[in-house]
Image 1 (cartoon, rainbow, N blue to C red):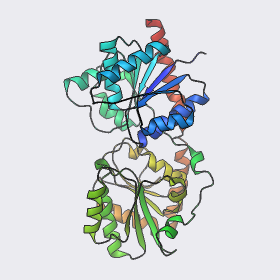
Image 2: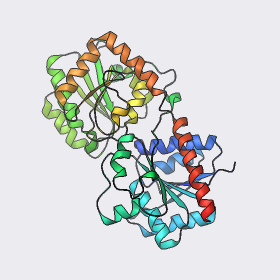
Image 3: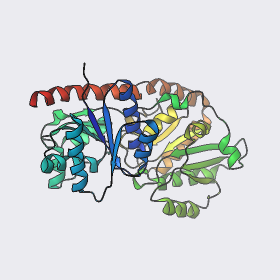
Image 4: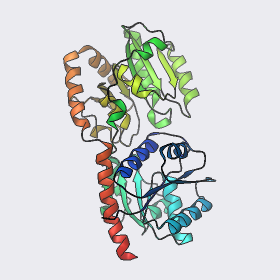
Length: 372
């Protein structure tokens, strides 16, 4: 079978969960001999990834959120490379692809990945671009996002759930190295609780700090780690200082050694207010670290309360603190949660994500060839 030719489009400049999922997908599709290209922003993290990974790519400047020049480049690339399918990986990529079709005669079919767990905007253009004739499928990373998005579609049959996955090999053979304890001069008996996420509003690190402060007041033997950077760095740093526990709530900034330090955590605590799926939770599962989380967005599809982890309501710092205590104190319960989570993790692999995505490509490509 001849696979369709695909153009992935990413307009992000930095590297977050969506870009990691794009990298996983491109890598897996490469193994399946899918001819594909990536169009990204010049000097972005995605361009660096493509260059280092020998992925065929194009890069261009991004001038605005409605960039007619970017749209023109999409149309030109599709014509020259006989692109059948455009796969957009963020909202601006979706917008530019619609403009490419409407203003520059691009004939490629469009597949949209949606990773955010809030409704499609009620603006006329948002409704237009999600119901555009060239948008053949919308791939949601969780059932929750599918439910939220479907109400905005004239044809809900276009929407599918394709859960994100992770690459187990990143964590193969990784064990507790004590790296954080050593780096931050912590006693070996100190329990570590942490999260790995961008310092962005929807991650709600303020609730993380509130839960940490509750536990720090009760126990001198717990230290908390905020691992990541982002636009709220200064605000969160000030909030940590205000809590009175700045010496025990440590902000590490962005790190590239997550597979080394994640297994050292005693509990993974994620306090998101909104979340598409929460693939860092899967990373924690892979490292056999028990998870306490908020029931935001698609998280309950991974963290099943009292089975693969513990769930609290969004912003409920009191319950989150209580659940962290349980994970640290009840070792039998902790072991059961870890085993269940490890089993559940087998449903969320990069290969499974790629296989479902390729099946969608093939279906849409068949319709494309009939039209053209």
